[in-house]
Length: 188
Image (cartoon, rainbow, N blue to C red; front, side, top):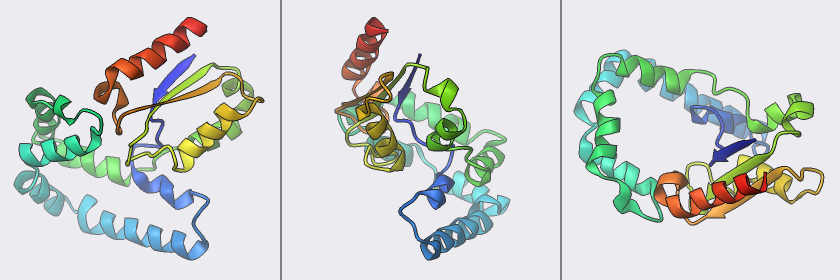
């Protein structure tokens, strides 16, 4: 089986353009917004390098990470901050960051399930989601998709456990997240 923690879509936010709640005008505006960001920042090596050098600090990263840890922000320690800060200052960081934000985010879970239902519907699936995740909220398109699957008797191998946490439930609330994983493993 597979256990996923906060099953978001892709490595960037471009997938939001294809979420069902947008009408064609809204999709066009979102596409324009991403194109402008790409042009002004992520495909502009000079600007991106300047931002990484001058604005990305350990304090900024600490604050950003703490915002993701809703249950226990004190788990954001110096070691975690340095694990993000160090790579941001290394050679190649500009290229890597540019690619993360401009590349195709890949297929959404919904698309994958529609393409490979005969394979994916047979695999036991446990999802552990933070109830206060603001990056990939359980009320978003992917979360709603999996909530509906977990409630549907047609998909008995799909389980979703919501724990008190933000975007990083396995670190923000390791007790409940690991408990959900271990309970599921015992049932498999």
